[in-house]
Image 1: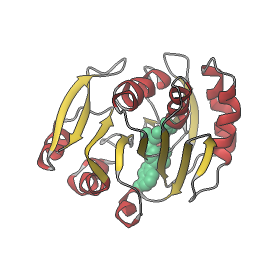
Image 2 (image 1 turned 60 degrees about the vertical axis):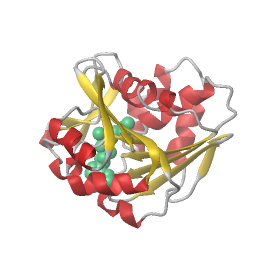
Image 3 (image 1 turned 45 degrees about the vertical axis):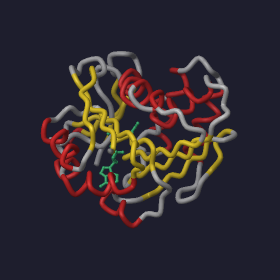
Image 4 (image 1 turned 180 degrees about the vertical axis):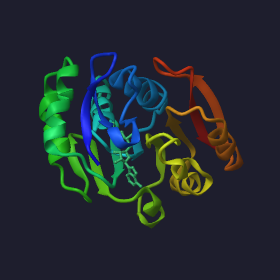
Amino acid sequence: MHREIKTTKDGSKTLYINELNESYHSSHGALQEAEHVFIKNGLNLINYSEINILELGFGTGLNVLVTINEYLKTDKNHTIHYFTLEKYPVLASEIDALDYPSLFENEILSEINTKIHAADWGKPIEIIPRFFLTKMECDFFKLSNLTLPEIDLVYFDCFGARVQSDLWELPMFEMVSEKMKTGGLLTTYSSKGSVRRILQSLNFNVEKKPGPPGKREMINAIKL
Ligand SMILES: C[S@@+](CC[C@H](N)C(=O)[O-])C[C@H]1O[C@@H](n2cnc3c(N)ncnc32)[C@H](O)[C@@H]1O
């Protein structure tokens, strides 16, 4: 499918799929959305010495980059294992055109972005000390077949239900839940009522949080 680059309202860029009328990020601000949904309401709520993160899906790698940017602000005495799934990897030329390192003050992010995208698929790569990235070229529906450690934090960042409704239904969340630790957190930009009910039926404590710019609410769900 043909993808084009679009600039979102905070000046950061995203990919847009014309045939689906769907973007990889919010048109109100790709960077703001990533930082609000996955950092402020995700990573920053977890406080373990080893954190296992599962992301659906890798896409442009922006969520990996904001996660590393946040990690670099800490005393770096914890370890992150970041697993990310993607079936349709984006092109190197698209990564260049998105120019995400220019969004960050820390110049080391440029080198890190190159490492993220050069990383081999299917094996853990230590991008910076104590931050291990495993990119998995895999269909979300094959998640059950993957061997993963118990997951503390899920970045549920699929395309919207309008274009991929089956990713927002019970079988998908059952598979995700099975990979999570008790007490693990799932964070997503969606606030869909049906998603909240599915998560509750799977014994999650579901909380509506204020959403990123352009969105009233989003979901945080803790596995009980
Ligand atoms: C909203 S985008 C992810 C955005 C990404 N987190 C980022 O920061 O760029 C959704 C991603 O899911 C991927 N995807 C869609 N269907 C998939 C499937 N069945 N299995 C695996 N990946 C899929 C798409 O290719 C796309 O990269």
